[in-house]
Length: 404
Image (cartoon, rainbow, N blue to C red):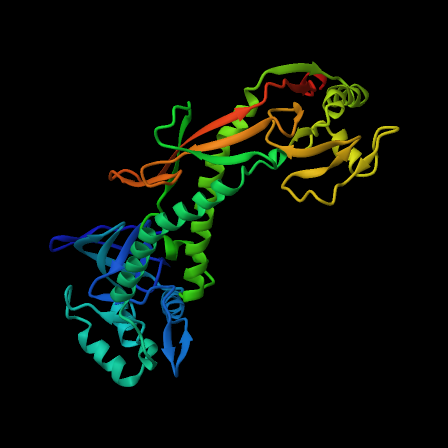
């Protein structure tokens, strides 16, 4: 690439050199981003309408500039104004003013607030039905304003929607399938029960997130926009709900523990049988939680048709919970977030109740938006009290790394 600096009045010129197209009205030359002065190109994801049918005019405009600049050398002279990460400039090649060509071919609109240099070219393009003028088109600046309005309106509604859906989920299910019979309830605001105060923070998408999230092969369509927005909202709901249930797993990890170290498959099988026998004799259901991805490896082998000699492997048809693998000798086995290569053996009635404290609104989740300039986020707060039975949790430790 050739880089030259020539003083032209108060400005410098960059080029000549090959340019990389960044849109219908922007390019990169020698590492510097330039935006065409005096015009506004249709946005890449923008659609126009011809005979009532949507046409990807934004993508077509970008391709038109790519075709125009293919194999030619470009020189850009900045005007001294700047927008975002780009300098406004007049860019030209040996074939003439590039901006004027784009407007004359109907791929951009004149912007007389910056310069009236392309007003006549736009008028000619309109009269000849060139490019975007062959049908109906929304001004690019209006399109961007509409997107901004859509994003603002959606974010305003999303907080309340996330709050309501997460609230309902937390009120009806512990979310930890091994404790299926746990009572989910609420505490009065003034009820004297010790609770754990928690919060979940969700980043609010930065301005422009709709177009940023639309894949490059898509043009702006309402179906695409709806998908982008809903995917983010559902993800946020899931994050808030999992955060609201996090203390249950943390509480399980802090229960009284009996640690058994096992070094091989046979010892492991004997250990789970030993730990489960008292529970079965009491008429309680033992549960084994193994880590993902199924360490030690023999757990996966057992449920793939290679159980220990004499073991009975079944799968209960009345259990349809996340992580459930099956049952071995009456012990229900789940994959869960256990630490390292350890497995946990416990009764399924260990957690008897999870009570969320009601707030002044009669809900269990409090919500606010925190925007301090550096961060923009939704903050969900809650307080939870857990009731556990006094049973000891058996930790089966397999020193996998020690045996490498």
